[in-house]
Every structure is written in structure tokens, then in C-alpha cells.
View 1: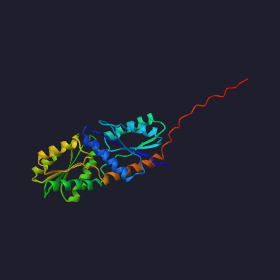
View 2: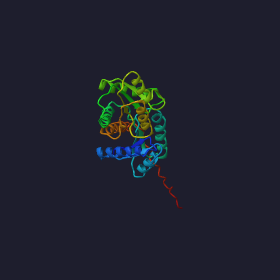
View 3: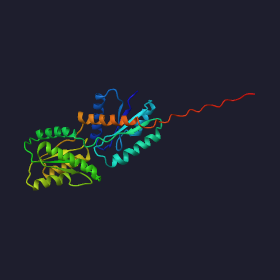
View 4: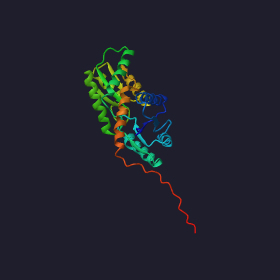
Length: 264
């Protein structure tokens, strides 16, 4: 039995660094699981679309596909865009069994990556002292998604015995700059900002520039490609692959048979 193909579905960005990060992650995943067919696709801004990728897989005889949303938050894109993609793909390619996995989520293992990125930034900036942290993410109008960031921020602060604030670039408050300013007004002069973004792009750049203007002594790079992120992708893929077993089989194409012609 052939394992389902894995189609990683990223949001997409006009910033070429974002797509480059996704493709680097795909390369990492292929090295970890050479037995799997793994492809990248994007919701917007850059090719290929999920339909182009899934159509290619269907033409090659692939029968099962797991679409994995390369998202940290279970918010709008996960709840609206991804189900719409899967429904449309099932309509276009009825011979395929297609399922979407869960998003990556704000998993605790991401803190290991965050710490490495922060240590590298502190070393480059020769920062030797911190007295507060800010965990910056994209933000959402979904309060549950934001609450997950707040939980992860609390765990990060506990790791380092430092006070921490969760901050949001969009749709929620405080912003990274506001969070940094708040700590500085309380007398904490050495505030570092952790970037809880998967890849470089407009929002991480905004978080960094505004936080530094507010007085942050360090802002870490986005999470990027790492073994932890890759393992999280494969974990979500594995669970979705098991869920495929409960789906109804895809209908097989009906082959019309010519009627017999009776001769006198």
C-alpha cells in the first residue's frame, strides 16, 4: 500500500524569502522521508497552486493526498481557505481521496527553535543581559488563536525566568512596539523580541522594525527551517493519513460498455 502524497499548502507571499523558506523545508522533509511524495503549493502570491500540484499527482496515478496547511494558527485561513481548497480539489479530481491535516499549531517544541534563533541574535548583537521578553506573531481576530500564543509566551517566560508579553502585528493588541514600550516604561531596559513566524516576510519585518524603534535590544529571526518544524509537519501528516482510512472510497470512473447488437 502506497503512502498518501503530502502536499504542503503555505500561505504564500510576494516576498521571495518566504517561498524560498518553504522550498527549503520541502527539501528537508524529502531528506527525512525519501519514501514519501512531498510537494509544495501556495494559497496566494506565488506558484504553484494546490490544484496544479494535485492535478499533476492525479495524472501520475496517485490515489491519496494529505493537504497540510503550513500555518501556525487555526484561524481564518485554516477554517475558511483550506477547507475550500480541499472541497474544490475533491470536485476537480473525484478519483482522489483528499484530506486536510491540522495546522502545525503553537506547539511547545517550537520554543526550542525560538531559543536557538534568539541565542544567535543575542550573540551577533553582543547582548549579555535581558530583563523582559516579547513574543511576536501575526495575530488574528480569532481570540482562541491569540490565546494559544499567550500560552506559549507564558511557557517561554517560565523557561528563562523572565516576564513575557505576547504581541500581535495585526488584528489584536498589544503590538510588538507597544509591548516593548510597556516594559521600558516599567524600567526594564533590556527587552528582546522573539519572532513567532515560520518565514521572513512583510509581517516579521514590520514586527522587527517597529520593535527596534521602540527600544528592543534584540529581535530574533523567524523560525525558518528546522528539524523540529519538519517533525511537526510529519506528525500532522501521519495523523491525517490515519484519518484517510475512515473516508469513503473515492468513486471509480464508470466505463461505458457498448450495447450488444443483435443480428437477425
